[in-house]
Length: 161
Image 1 (cartoon, one colour):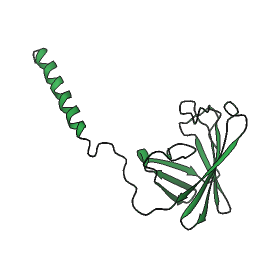
Image 2 (cartoon, rainbow, N blue to C red):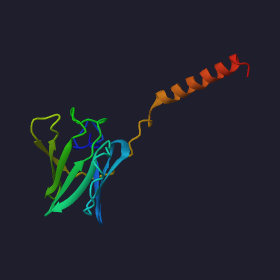
Image 3 (cartoon, rainbow, N blue to C red):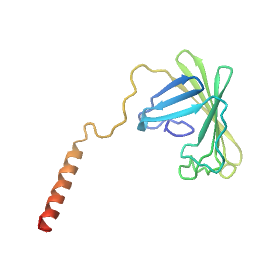
Image 4 (tube, rainbow, N blue to C red):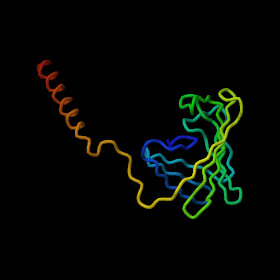
């Protein structure tokens, strides 16, 4: 989903909020309340030996386009079978008042013969981003907890407590 790199839509919770500050851009993903922090202050990537679940993002502006270089992936969260050699370059360009063109290029010589590029148009929406929580309206949770308490009571009774 959008909480991974590259950022592709999932079945639901696809809303994003992009916030820019001095030397930083943050993308809040509705799914899993994930916040992706992208330094734009020319700071370097960490050493290649440091592998991160979503890679390390470093951005810079090329005119009106935010260009984000993402490296330092680990091998535990592969994108379409990629390895820890994955390298992604993302480009975020506002092409209309209500549209951002998200274009990304993926390369991983251990997975694909050559780099490839895809793009999506993101349309601005109004309204809040909701907290991602699976327990609202989850009536099964009360049953699960009551059964666990009953099992604990039975175990305590058998232990003579």
